[in-house]
Every structure is written in C-alpha cells, then in structure tokens.
Amino acid sequence: MIDDIIIKPIGIVHSERVHRYETPRQGVLAGGDISVIRLSPNFNFEQAVKDLEGFERIWVIYQFHLNKNWKPMVTPPRHTRRKVGVFATRAPHRPNQIGMSCVKLESIKGLEIFISESDILDGSPVLDIKPYLPYSDSFPGAATGWVKGGLENIYVVEFESKAEEQCLWLKNEAGINLVNFARLQLEFNPVDDSRKRISAVENKGRKKGMFILAYRTWRIIYHVNAKGRKVLIKEIRSGYTDAELKDAGEDLYKDKALHRKFIKQYFNME
Image (tube, rainbow, N blue to C red; front, top):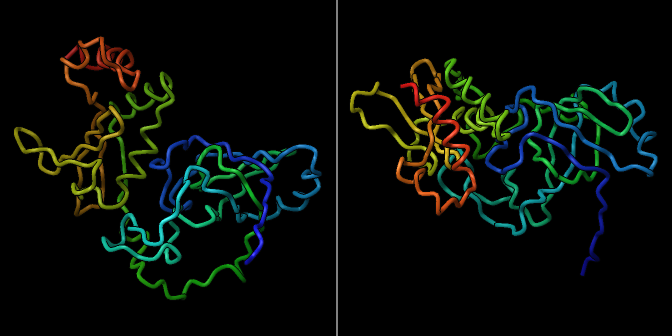
C-alpha cells in the first residue's frame, strides 16, 4: 500500500467566479477579469515569489474544492456526446481533486498574486505555483486524441445596450454576473437546445434564431447568427410568472423582491 500524502495549501484564490457553471472550459477563454491568489502569511512566501514577476504566465496547481466524488468516465461539455475516461479530460471529477491552470500573471504585491485568463473558482485552495516555460511546456503539433478542433469553432458573444444595462444593474444590486455566464455558456454550441439551460423560442412573431438561456430564476434572451458565428444578447427577463411573483408565501431562492424591483425598473414602462 502507498502511504497517504498530506498536502497543505499555500493560499486561496479569490475570484468573481463562484459557481461551477461560471467557469470557462479553459482559462484562455476567461478574458481579462482579474483574480487574486492570496498566499498564507508567516511561511516566508514573500521570498518564494522573488523573481516570479518576470514570467508572463504561470502554472497554478490547486484543489477542485467543490467536488467531493470522482467519476472514472465523464461526458466532455462540447467535443463529444460519448463518455471518455476522466484521465483523458480536464474534468474536475478526479480521484485527488487536483486541477492545474496556465494563467496570465498580471502583478505581484506582497503576498497577493494578480492573475487573468483564469478558470479557477473562488475559494480554491492553491497547492503550488510554477513558471510557464514555452520551450518545454508548449508542443503545438502534438496529437490531441478525441479532442477535435479548438478556438475556430467559437462564437462571438455581444450584448445590446439594454441587455448590457440590465446585466450591470443585476451585478450592482445582487452581485449576479450574467455577462460572464452568458459568454461561457454560449461561446460554443449556442443553438444546442438539448442542453438543459437552453431552449429555442417558438417563432410566433419573433425573429428566427431566438433562444433562451436560463440562469437560476433569470432568463437571457438571445439571437444566433450561425453563418457569422455571432450571438447577440437581446435582453434579460425574469423567470417567474406574474402569479408566482404575486405569491408572497413561497420564495425558495429568496429573490422575488429583487425580481419585482427589476421588473419595475425595466418593464413597467412598457
């Protein structure tokens, strides 16, 4: 028997991405949002980061802290509908919950390491940090097994001014980041209504190619230009019916007051 290995985290990631469905499939798709690795004090980590700032990218080894069980077979999110072995994927459902991401290093201030292009969720314990070296870490011509295609299949996700304003309102009022969520969910396969969060809109006076993306009790209305590979977010709607909002007795998600305020702000004038 191999003895257990005890690993102590060296710090914690602080990020706007809190839920698993908010994380991109790869860090390079995350954009310029800044996350912070806060290293633990009293371990001489101030010395450990010396000379790290000269590297443009770093490897962050961390724990998938939200995953309690592992799966030997998983279904990848976009490349195939068949199950593949977890060791042939980057899925978080791993025996030892270990993740690794190559992120962009923005700056270092004391025990705080500022990073971007990160797919690491808020609260993830950091186990180690290593510099990225292009000459030894990059193999562009390497075979990629079952993974076919890459960024050439990506859709550009844009927001109409009304949707952009609504998203900003929700972020300021309740910390709900629908912009990140919509981009991550719709950059690949935005017309696949077999996915549980996507539904096609029936063409009853509406433009063809309209879809709805669900986020908890919110609904994101969008149009897809398949030929131009673009997604246009039209507006945000409440997922509650009028009858549900009038029912003050049941409020499972504790957000009906927020929905009423949102509707008064954006739809009572219609």
